[in-house]
Amino acid sequence: MNQDWIATARTLSQALPYMQRYEGAIVVIKLGGHAMGSAEAMESFARDVVLMQQVGVNPVIVHGGGPMINEMLGKLGVKSEFVNGKRVTDEATVDVVEMVLSGTVNKRIVQAINAQGGRAVGISGKDAGLITCDAAAPELGLVGEPAEVDPRLLTTLFADDIVPVIAPLGVGRDGETMNINGDTAAGAIAAALQADRLLLLTDVDGVQNKDKEVITDLTVADIHNLIADGTIAGGMIPKTETCIAALEGGVRAVVILDGRAPQACLLELFTEHGAGTLIRSK
Image (cartoon, rainbow, N blue to C red; front, side, top):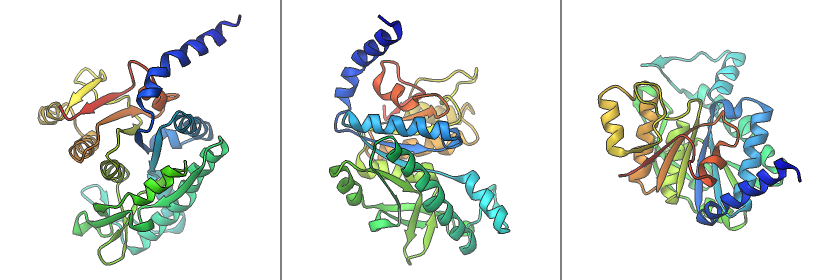
């Protein structure tokens, strides 16, 4: 008998307890980085999402699209201003952001999931009052911080076995379109859904110690200590702060993992050792 077939059967058998564990669970996945960078990576991710749904998980996809936005701004000749390294989002910029995120990027993900036999629908935080925002910082213009999240649309989609694919946009208090950081949007949505897991797919293996080794398990207190001593620095600081906010909002656990790794989500959910860095409240 073919040894590969035997290995496949053994893997499925070993995954059974984890599949049972996550039946009916809500898993919010922030898709970004390399996982969006090629047709092959997108196809692999979409297949994983469909498999997750087939075994009873309710996946929610929140995506970014920074490189695609930058490319389109350049093509259209829209110049960007930056304050402390963060883009100022004016009305011209937010129009491009919405066009790219809700249009090109969102529908590409939806199409990939549907092509694998799933049923996905693309929306943004503007739909059905999903995300209401306050201004993140006045100097940044139309950059929003989620203030209220109404998940009723998402639970309606779950009931009909539809995968929500969400562009990180929201509505301000005066009805204006607001651009939201993808990690921040995913964390707020996960908290509103009281999700079992929030998976942040990145281009690193996870949170690393000073020797550049991945730390597999962390608590909120650990993160505060690692930020204080400089181990967690740069772009990993806001990412871990998103994790803390999600946990404080009721998410059971958050995982920072490498979206470049094949089947990263399946490794995390359905194997004994998981993948990346698992973060819990305590």
